[in-house]
Length: 409
Image (cartoon, rainbow, N blue to C red; front, side, top):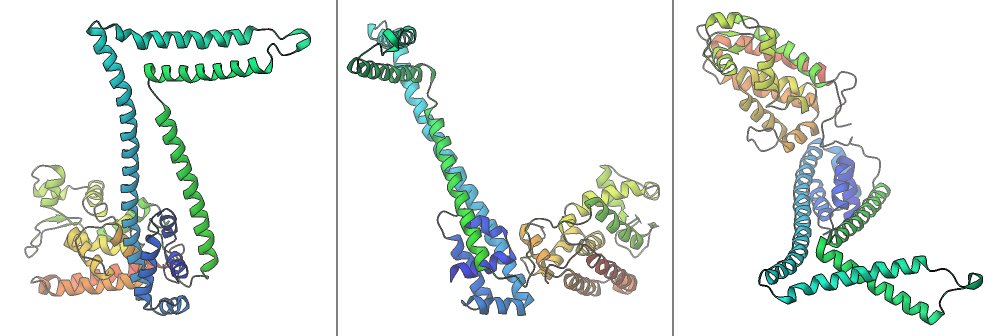
């Protein structure tokens, strides 16, 4: 049952195949299968597919769970690779330490005037001279009469043995005086064999999953950012909508934020410029500077560029109006993940797993409920409601434009 259930998971999150194939312990496939079994409520692959096709919430929950499993798998894989590298380094250090110890012992004997210190140098010199002498002799010897072999078979056999012994001794001398690269070669050979084995596992797993998986009724979702309009174009489009709502210079006595211009408060501008600003400075604020403030303080920290089209506008607009932390928490609550106020891989995966129009509507409803609970609602409530309604309409248009597909078929 494991492979059919894993195939269902792979139809929703193709990246999981690579992690399963690279898991030499073989535990990740079981974890993925358990996740499908728990969410679908059955071990039967056909029943599980039917349950997921009939319930979008189960699909979203499974995608979030798979994202968590993928992140944990990446972390464990990185730890294993680090352990292998450390083990290889320890082996290399031990080899080098042995060579250094031998050299250190010889140097110590030299300083002590011991005649034994000359032993390694003498033996090394004899080996090197003998190796090259025999090599030169064999190269320069002419063939016998009529091109016959110079030596009879028995002598040739002895010469081959001698050359082989001198070659091994010469390699040992080089290893002693210059240092060994054998550990590096062995390490490279091991890494090469592991990479070949892993590639074969990936190919086998992909072939098996392709054979086992039916045509998915749900479009796969990637843990990476989906392709779409350029980030700058999306940012400009969202910023235009925010500035339509924020307007120009305002200094309403009931507004706790005080004087604002294009939605930028005195405090925000002072922090951006790293110095106190006056009301005259607020009035003279340019759109170019406001644009950079919005990018640095709101768009980038909330990772709006990585959110689905339309959802980015909802999160960005509310972050400008009520603070980035509050906006992110509202997104996390609407997407059904842990609420911590920080946009990470799980929050992004959950946001992409939802149907963008549904998530936009949930965010709008939550935002209206938030405004109704504020003490300043009698003064600003009507304007806030108009703003939420206008932002929701534009966000829905963004989410359904050509080239922006919903994640669930």
